[in-house]
Image 1 (cartoon, rainbow, N blue to C red):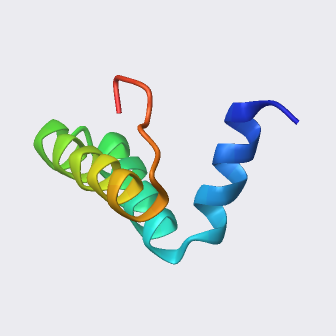
Image 2 (spheres, rainbow, N blue to C red; image 1 turned 90 degrees about the horizontal axis):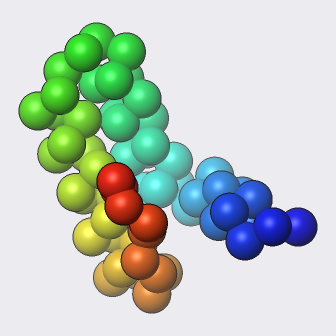
Length: 59
């Protein structure tokens, strides 16, 4: 399993990650770039604080 596949699986298993990814996807669908950026920042902070991982940019 590739590292990115493993990270995606881990994100789906974490309820906070899943919720934040949902916010990113919703904002992207609605072309709300401000909300999308906010959700991405929250996701990066969560991943760093709770999972000890840095998400690759542009996250």
